[in-house]
Length: 364
Image (cartoon, rainbow, N blue to C red; front, side, top):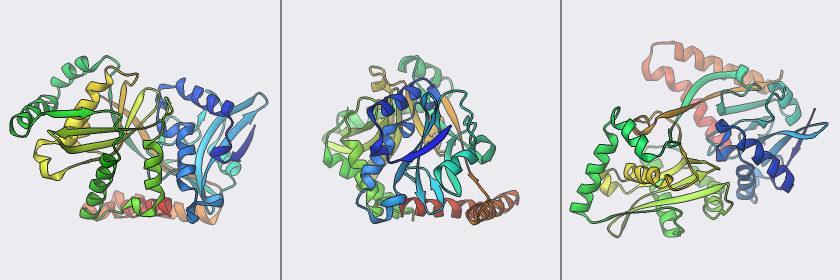
């Protein structure tokens, strides 16, 4: 077994087909973040930014055997460390490979030519990485394989969210005007409005404005204009009368819509326009090949109310003996010690600091 590292743009048409075919064979892998299109879009978006050129840009590790390619793993190298391609905007990581392929995490470290691999949203069913998980989380979603009507009926017995949204929709129609929904919007004005709402939220909540790095904006544009039937972005919009009140730029795989960049007009927040838009997306999916809406990680109340499915993910690292590995081990040791203490928010500070540092590393 060999591991060769190439640029995503160097993937041949047959490699892209083989990678995509492996994705289609496993329902758990049906995520746009695991597709070859993601690595290729990230590389194109980051080209021209000095901090991501050379060995710092997106890469693909191809695992090959005597009978050809057997697996693909996208990443980005920063110094002696590998991290997810497109981090911190990548919501899933994983090795897409033949079932039964025996490859260990430290073999990948060696093959990538790094001292360690960091991961933050790794699928937990990955044999190469499962032994190195340092914590677990869930990514909630909506399984619509039985159709929206069946989903709504089942949810009504557990949550009053959909009924409440129907009431809010009628209230909008009485007080403002018609509610209109659009999928695959090509409006750049709507996209720019979404980005503006998102940046306002970053500043209002003292979060890092990820768009200041430059390449994330180019990535959004790259995905907004993508026309590959199996991968790309899809802009959803919601209007009250003639006013844009919510917009979502989500990613699409073969059968999955992944919630990604979402925003709404705070002036009409009392009507929950963002949730109304999610409801319209679920209804729209009934007449499409898409049967799963993935909300991604994050324990938000609305996700719990909508969700009827989940995927397990985890964070951690795998490394070989090195300074980089010792540093990460110390960081996780401090984090684990703090989280064992009953100090409320103070116990969460090391974990928050690590996530903030990883975000900056990804953007730099």
